[in-house]
Length: 488
Image (cartoon, rainbow, N blue to C red; front, top):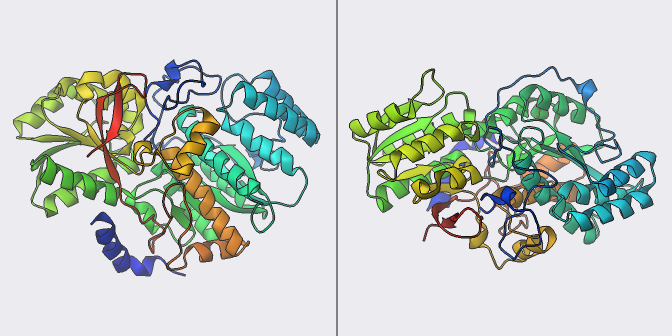
């Protein structure tokens, strides 16, 4: 089962294939019981105003902490550790559930988690632990979900909502071949060293049949070799760097790669905007950012366009004002923001200084509430490529169920996380062994029922699905006065 040898087939499939909601300033809202269409606020938390308030899977962290496999409590990661993986205060009802779970009192844990969800219905961790408590000591299939809870609680919650909804759907339908699905939740902090420690710990637990994660492309690339060497399937719902396609037979993702997003954006620049000369802003500190820059440049040049300036915002002394002026002086007709969420401040500076003078496009990291809140009128017309948007699927059962479950709108990370869990569930259904899961998912022609569309993989494990374009327009769904809406 070699995905690498089928690269020509990948390229052909890409050509054929090429032929959010959640962002917004919803942390400003204090209640989940708003009208349909309102955003879902974080659980028991205020605004995460740090630079890690990521809404994409592409923060590109390269941090390294002194974590090792011995620090990772896999046995307690189903909730019986007695601790939440999310930062911030825990409600009394939820803590009662965690305490009861730690003592092995599953009935009391179920009751407490149910009470916690009545207080905070939008808490996916509580729902997952409720599902796990309902399993108790019964036989179950086990997968793990790794999220960046500590540095980036909002996207972590978005991912956990997708995972929780998928687990609930699976178990309410009778499980996988009659067995329920148990989930282990781990905070990898979007830190490469900690993610490696988590991978080592999960690899060492034979009960774990697959992993959903990791968040940024840099972190996923850092751990892919370990999962590949051990034969444990990894499915990332958010990492988009093209290089991940080279990681091996056990690495899949339910989000399209940057190659597809770049092709979509370059066609938009050339055909819809009727512009040819672009200035590309990126950061050399992010695998994702470099991937988007490279793919967009290749696509633009190969179709008659030109890149007149490449600006690394991570260089010492970077000045957004000078860079924007220099780009315009070089003849730029459009600005491409190939930036990651760690450099959203720089992106917002560029957006503000451009003042809608040149049209702007960007990758999925620009699909972020911070852009709407800070950019406001200056962000109008910014067009970004995303894997999925709720307004394109508003009448689907998945979206209606999610709105009923969480009390508001979801975004693309919730949809792709749901699909990642469904992907592993299908692999387990077909062959509940580590080698069998990957082999099943690599079968040509495999089609899995996903959130709103079938899940199909290219020979490299990349998702065979085109990106779609959304643009910033005035609106009231996000609460900021501006929304991302599909490009018509």
